Length: 298
Length: 296
Image 1 (cartoon, chains in turn red, purple):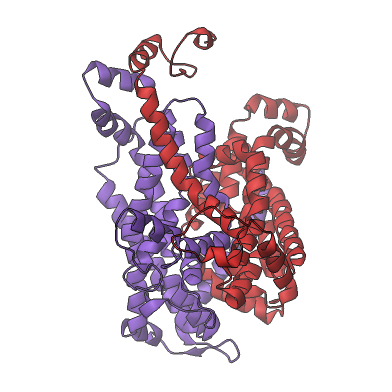
Image 2: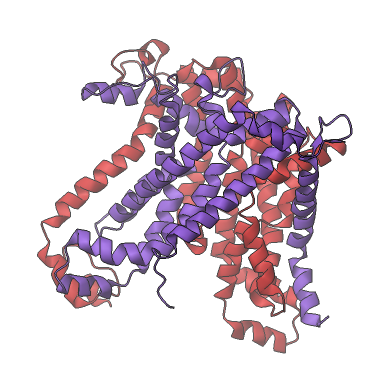
């Protein structure tokens, strides 16, 4: 298929396309321009809110409340960022959130991968039934279990700590288990059998054969787990009371409660909170998108 | 028991143990609590089906259920249509395709708290850019966050910005449609619409059904965006103007964690479960003749 590269096709044909298509798309040369127009309009709609947030966050207060709203300014300023950082212990929230997110990643990497190994690489009766059960639990509204679980944590005296957020992460999550299982299934059985013949135990095969070959999927899991923990709102809202322990989500929420109309500072805080995730996504976007496509679920 | 079964169960045990502790036992407990009066501090008092009877005559319960059904029945099709349209656009072969995909996906990684406040600013009736743009082209400028009629459309508008996950799934499905089918359609004289209607749509219909179920279940649990959009500076758990933002998850949260009516809230959770099951069943039934499964 290297010929595709050399062919002077106006719209670049991807690999595996028959020559007849190339001719057809060649006939539609004029089509290329409107495609760019469509894509530019779509992109602009999705990007516009980012432009608004960023410009608002760098504007002095009196310019933010100017009519009609405009994106420009004569006096760009960092005042909003200073105000946001003064009003809340941003570093503290950042540390708390990063801590919770990192432990979540570790817990899910360990637990989801070993369960997925059982579902993908050990042949046992009942395996398909278990997979069905795991997938079925994704349909259960969390509200059903939320209240008894809260009551249990509260009886144990552990509300107000991070444990109710962290401990469940060490028991696997159906989404991750399913994603890794899909990936593990793609690892050739011959490799597993060869290791078995050499007398390797299942745990050994899991650790030394399957995990090293699954880096892309494990990276995808890490990004997802990190992002979800970073953004989570409901559970920290329920379990965390002490401002010292706030995550960024709860911190921003309480900042809004007190400074709701200071839009400049609020947009600056929103920018600061989103920036790490946007950067993480830009670095890992290929694995991220692949992970979604692997499961077909959000 | 066969040895392989033991090994399989051993490796799967983290999930099985977690399932028992965090789901199975809580489900049973929740079913019991739903039949009690329980405020967390005193022992649960058995009251039979009284919580369910009270729900039937609770105006706010019905209001919250209708609010959530509004978002599910109108919001899900709207946002999935937008995701599919975006996927179709992003599937066009152009230079810089991956960059355009990145632009459309980027909002999806913005934390939901930040995203909701961003939209509160964009939808600000007076200084917001959405009304600024509507005014510039001579359209009406709704009071998005203050007019009970417009608060839910505001939520749906917000959800359009973060359709990235569904978009990626649709994109993957579109790429799985064999090129030869389109070629055959073109030879038969099909235009772009006919190709979409008779080739693309049937072939990706299982994915559409799947995404609809997932998005539907997700929307029934909707909480954070409504909670934050209705948030006023003094009263944290507000339902917005005339309770137009009091979605089911929000009312349940208020009952459970603000009023500490744990029994009543548990009954609400069970009603939600049945609504979700009934909705999924209905969807599967209605779609039975409309979804096309290619044998593979």
